[in-house]
Amino acid sequence: MTVPRRDVLKVGVFGGAALLLPLERTVGAQSALPPRLASSKLPAPFTVPFSVPPVLRTFRTDSTTDYYKVHMMAFQAEVIPGLHTVLWGYNGSVPGPTVHVNQGRRTVMRQINNLPRQHPTLGFTPWTSVHLHGAPSDPQYDGYASDVTNPGQYKDYRYANATSARTLWYHDHGVFHTAEDAQMGLAAQYHIFDQLERSLPIPHGDYDVPLIVSDAMFQPDGSLLIDNHDGSGFFGDVILVNGRPWPAMKVKRRKYRFRLLNASVSRSHNLFLDSGDAMTVIGTDAGLVEHPIRVTSLRAAMAERYEIVIDFSKYPVGRRIVLGNRSPKNNINYVNVDKVMAFDVVADSFDPRDNSIPDTLNPGNPTMALQVRDAVKTRVFEFNRGGGQFTINGRTWEDVVESGFTRVEASPRSDSVELWVFRNSSGGWFHPVHPHLVEFKIVDRNGKPPFPYEVGPKDVVYAAEGDTIRVLIRFEGRGKYMIHCHNMVHEDHDMMTQFEVIDPARASFDPFSVPARALPEGLF
Ligand code: C2O
Ligand code: CU
Ligand code: CU
Image 1 (tube, helix red, strand yellow):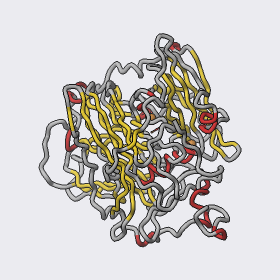
Image 2 (cartoon, protein in one colour; image 1 turned 135 degrees about the vertical axis):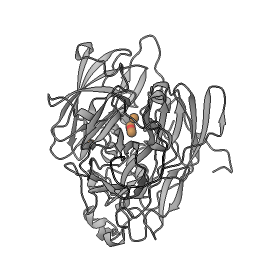
Image 3 (tube, helix red, strand yellow; image 1 turned 90 degrees about the horizontal axis):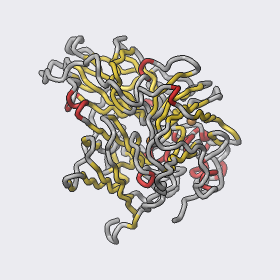
Image 4 (cartoon, protein in one colour; image 1 turned 180 degrees about the vertical axis):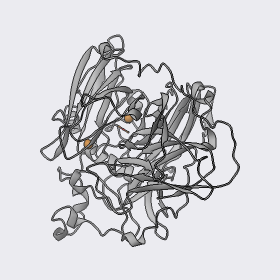
């Protein structure tokens, strides 16, 4: 096993690129930046049509399993009208193709790293590790950051899909370069369906629509400008939905269900409709909520998923409704990042079925039934910045690497419930906290109940400036899993550590036990 190391010395996020630039331009990250495309060259909001990513097709199925082949590859796309941008996509699509699978059916995803041997401007080697975010995968298939697949290699990821219906996503997790790899386009949705979800009269099929929100910045030649603001975060001036800048979607006069995913590297949103009308939250990260929740705004950090129903039946044909963003604190903003997309109401006829929201959606969810008295242990995780690094309890992923991957921050027992406390005492950053493997119930934030729309099973929680958040988790399975901030720039530098679920009756799986393999000659 060869473990990837950070490329150079710790020269900061931009260091890798700065080294390629003439010396006089390396004084300070800002001055080293290539010029950004003028705002006047960007499309006006709501002039580009909306689209949804393709659904991934199997290349083989048998009685238990769907098999997929995914090529991670570089390709050119016209994201900004008139310009060509090199992106990295799963099967040459950004966002990547959506996986649809029924609960209990197994999937095998062959992830083939066909990326170039070096990033075109930043110069790093794009080793990858694919994480299915939202699934309790075994450690060797969880996208453990240091379990990498180099260009010219592939790895088969095996998933049981045993969980209830939910919106998951798969994205790159390659150690130290997750932010750049995701910014280049390596992210996609993955939907698990189950009987309960299918039986509800909520929007399905054409009216069940992924909304993958991200941001980007471009150079005059069309290439992506990846500026990490000295390691604090990446913030683009273009808001993309499903890879399109500020798109406009034609909607019929009925209800739509949107699977909102904030796939940005660092930008959080606070979304609202410019009509002032309510949206109805029917699902959170880990599935449907018990009762629908009406909200007029919704804060979404990176990696959070919300399933939202918007009812367009009350609007006249021709009406435009804008999904806007009141930017939360500590994002870097540009003109038009206060807009996300538009919905244009059209007269087309529609299928009237599955056009309601029952009062009870998902009763008796085991995660939501957890109580503080069930917890056998309380553990505190401090999210901080120190010595130019982002840390968890003062430590970084580099410390885990240096320990030969033996260092763990916590060792919960399988089948036990714990109360985990996430504390962000800084005023300068917000940190979306994500433990792998588990889903949780938010008990409180700063002693107060969570926001109404957070009352559902979650796997990411927005730890805003100064927040202390308590969550209840039932641990199942065994082995080592990461916990990190989902600002991927923080995660890479190095706000990530691990915990190990202990099952005394069974040995743990080693995250490195299924290494990537070389592609047969001629395939690369
Ligand atoms: Cu969505 Cu460890 O990540
Ligand atoms: Cu995850
Ligand atoms: Cu963070």
